[in-house]
Image 1 (cartoon, one colour):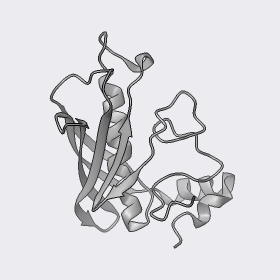
Image 2 (cartoon, one colour):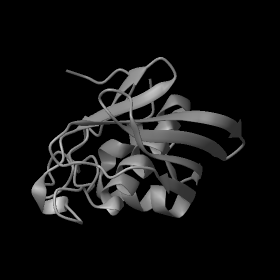
Image 3 (cartoon, helix red, strand yellow):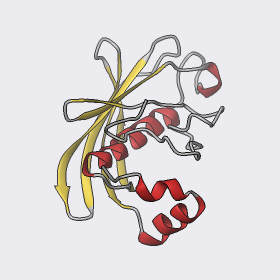
Length: 157
């Protein structure tokens, strides 16, 4: 089924650690829209724990980074992280499903400011973040399209 919002990689690449479904060691996040938010769910696994029974903070950071950066899809742009500030509020247990969301807080030419959070399914905030995401440099976009031609039409409607 085609992703009408183009939030998920449907190319032959799919190796991103956060969202690549061909990356067996990654998180394999699948995104959807809820109004103006980009949302994904994730069931933590033991191999990504920090302290016993607790998901490593770097995985929470990855989830926030990918989800907040994914808000660029709402503008049909590829964005990369310029700045990411995270506040860790509570340990993330391995035995509970997590929900991550991101939304645009402010738009400007070539960049967006986004906010987001990782929560338990009951809404308890485990970490929240604010970040600035900038347009992918043209040279990197061109190189990517050269190696994976299907990326050329990724943002066309």
